[in-house]
Amino acid sequence: MPAVLGYGAGLAVLLGTFDYTGGVLTGYEKDPNVDEYDRKQQLRKNRRMPIEETISDLGEGRGIYGPGYEERRRERIRQNYGINVPATESMLTERRN
Image 1: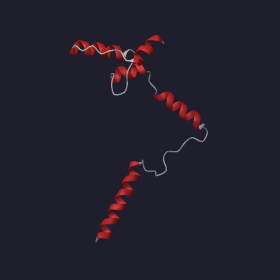
Image 2: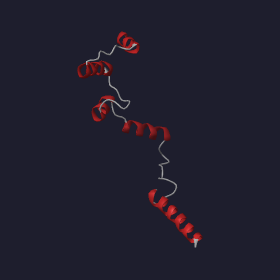
Image 3: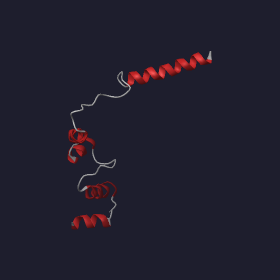
Image 4: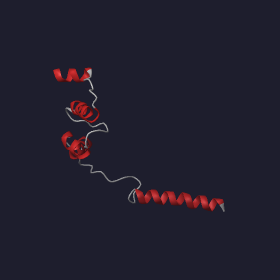
């Protein structure tokens, strides 16, 4: 009896994988006439968005910061909490450049 349950579970995993991959286990068919480098460049160009659009969609934070973020952050902290945050050395060098 345990063997029957094991075979059934294995078959369920196999058929689930087959169904998840769209009925093929090897992936989609690539066009042999298209260069792989050109195909990847097209995918990259198709997916990239300007940083301004990304920031407007997601908002700042979570590792995505727009130009002038440190100044806006210092001003927001000063207004909300009354704490003056000093500019860091990296911010001072960025202003000079």
